[in-house]
Image (tube, rainbow, N blue to C red):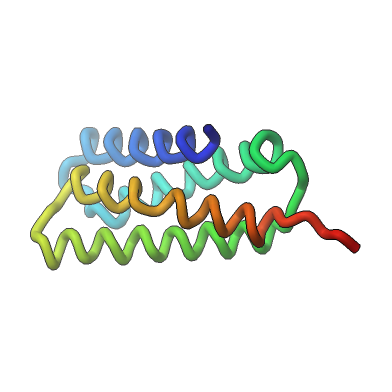
Length: 114
């Protein structure tokens, strides 16, 4: 549920930005949307999904990796497939959550058994 909410926030913010400023570069819209969605994701995963603090720096690395993957896909879609605007952002953003969820579950919020 948290990943779905964060993804929805990401897409909503990106759509709003591109609607209000059609000339805005897709990568700038994506960065801003990611930063807003990251807050939803961090708080939600800590309080709801994993119900433990986990490591903020590990989660930050997972998020940064997810963002790098998202931007890589966005670049591929825009340059390789000639897609642009919200469609490219949506495809890239919807492709990443399972990867970041697994990395968060298996590493960032992993329970310490020490």
